[in-house]
Image 1 (cartoon, rainbow, N blue to C red):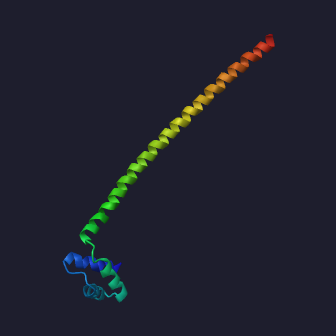
Image 2: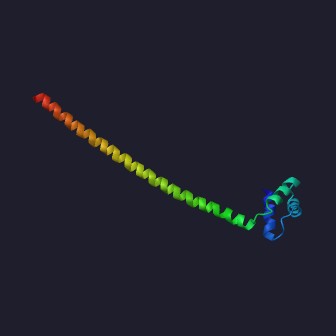
Length: 114
């Protein structure tokens, strides 16, 4: 991570991101520098607009948080709808049971009286 920080420091100061500059910052910070990592970093950042990358990275959590909040609200609304549907089904089932009981009672009386 300190390699990326070194590149960000160079970018912020307007200095070119070169192997020498990255190595200089890392050594000043007391980091044991691995040349292969410095080369990989500088090669990876050759065609990258760091300002644009930082801005898009900063915007991503805000968009994700907004999407998550919207998703949570939608999930809550769906759960409420499901609860309402379950209650309606239970009421309908109770009403059907009541109708069947009434019919059974009438048949029973008819059998008693004949």
